Image 1 (tube, rainbow, N blue to C red):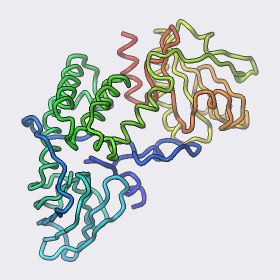
Image 2 (cartoon, rainbow, N blue to C red):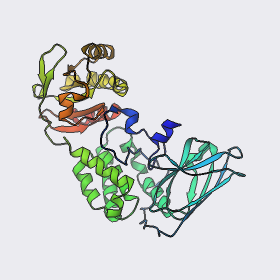
Image 3 (tube, helix red, strand yellow):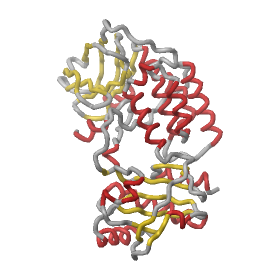
Image 4 (tube, rainbow, N blue to C red):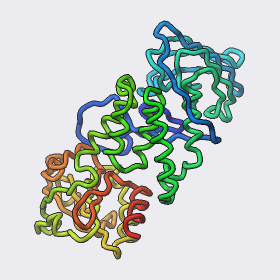
Length: 381
């Protein structure tokens, strides 16, 4: 259960893995935001209408009717950001209810018997009705909340473009452009809707341009920037500007496995994935097969990898290289988290990477699995 509660966040309709689930690292400044997951939708819908702030004196009343659960099953209303239980009750004749007050519309989770799947609600101070069945509880019908209706409508508007957001979807420039235009138009016409930060997040997922994301963020109503999603966007923009796309990655040099100094600039003329990892990093080792596949697939097209290890012992470093079949150049000063290159680029968690073009400009960051393959397929066509 701990894993479930750590991963609940925002508009999830699937379990969301937070950064701690896929990376290991040193402490970094705390943030109230976590990584959002992709949403799903079922059918096209009209343009989302404005969702105005609810009156501070109002309350929400949730009345639910569900089938398939045992009498007395536990029902919890969880904070969509932290996963903390805010209200709890039990099922009586298949019914449950919650009452409370919202400062602003935000995501909540309705969890039964402390097990997934669960119901995601974009809740406001309204009279909300939930109807569902255990076999498809995550697809329950939710009515009465203007905010949730807007959330569903926005999702539905993006339904034709779901392949653009899928990590393993094929790149389609036409579909991507249409999705970006749709989201851009929505944001510019719904500047004070509590759904709009979600739209900006979705835009950032496919735009691959932190400056364009920042332009949309800057037009948001100030109250939206204070929300968890608003703070998440600000964090993504700030991090995206550090060695962001279009910047030339500063040169560096460290000893390779034989003790010979190797510089990044010595690889100019190639597409280079600068990969920060370590033998002791479980998520890094899990990602290595994807790197091996990408390297073997594109090495004939002037693509290579430069591994920067945050190991402290050469034996562990070398053993991992051989065990995982990492047939590219590796460097390290064997100083662990004090690795000078990691310090230079403010690497607090691993795995992390930068993809640079033959001129040394950054064209991608933290590309993993299918996302890396899809990016390479685009630039190495």
